[in-house]
Image (cartoon, rainbow, N blue to C red; front, side):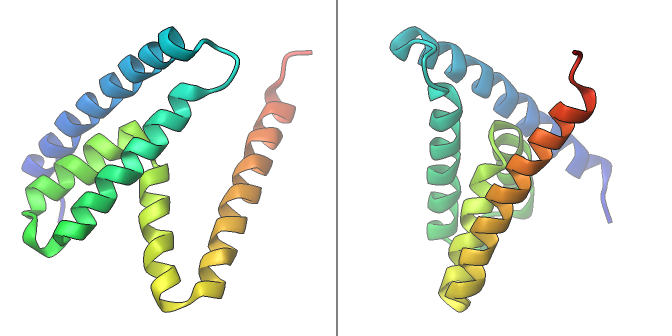
Length: 124
């Protein structure tokens, strides 16, 4: 059951993640320009590194409130790509072919959803 305390942890982490994403995007544009989405790549890779560190430490050794703050809150607003990376790594360890399917499904469905949303709501 979700408690008010859980919501506060997620909200605080979400605030930190969103502001971090914004600032890292500004920094990436200042460093590398706007010819490539460097900011998105930076936050996705950084988020993957952080969730990998947390998984490497062992999530069972990380308190539930810290997991909620860091994973759902910070990383959830910084990037959901980190969760995708972690889920896919775990799947690779159990079922490599299913992990490949997960990669394909996320990339293809994600791009298709972006295209569909754009197509449905694009102002001509």
